[in-house]
Amino acid sequence: MAGAFARMIALSNLDQGATVTSSNASLKHDISPAEWDARVNLAAAYRLTALFGWDDLVFTHISARVPGPEHHFLINPYGMMFDEITASSLVKIDLDGRKVSDSPYDINPAGFTIHSAIHQAREDALCVMHTHSVNGVAVSAQAAGLLPLSQQSLGVLASLGYHDYEGIALNEAEKPRLVSDLGKKTYLMLRNHGLLTVGTTAADAFVAMYFFEASCMIQVRAQSGGGKLTCIGQPILDGIKQQIAQVTRGISPGALVWPGLLRRLDRLNSGYAQ
Image (cartoon, rainbow, N blue to C red; front, side):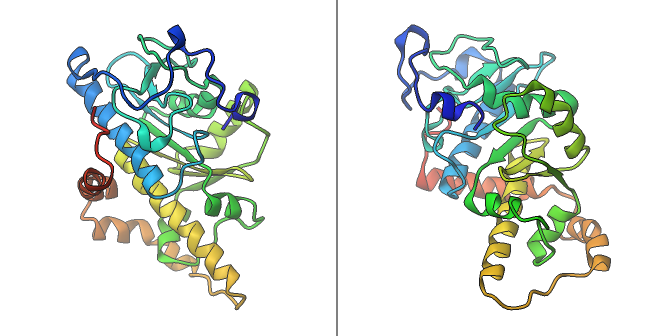
């Protein structure tokens, strides 16, 4: 969301006066198969985020590293709604948020502040997903943070960090603190701000966000009931990673779920692979 309030959706700086539109020529035959695959999966993640209701107009980001030796990344064109994004419309940038290939679309450079910090520090963070979902922000504003109230929350709590709010993410000096608070974890709760997940694939980052968001939704609903809450004990939390590995048979949850999610997306909002 960084810089969004300053610029909102003023897109007057688009190259050659182009307007943001979901209609664009396919890049499939102009790039490597590996990059195209990364683009398709990232575009799918954007559209699924909209489908699940986690988008915040155009003011959050999912970024993915482009396969190859260069430190290049894909991010959403500024001003395009998440349910409009295609593989070809994604913008390729460097760690400083500068475009490294021709694109008619602008980006929000400040929006890459959080993502670039994590991509640079974590070689395994090939995809970084950040949301401002209502439930996520609600729990991020609670002093106790995420509570062990549900089975969904346990996997999150086993790999969760917290980062205090420092204003809209424009300050480069915030990056080391972001990196330190995430550490080697998969989940980061940005206090008073939202949720963040990392993954080796867009599928893993998305499915991690699903459980993060579900945990927050369950917590808000449980609290709204007004009754005394029952927390899950620490011994169960301590063994949850082994139990998850057993249930998933050692396969990442993203790999298990992603094919089905893509089939759902093909039925409800196809066109992302263009």
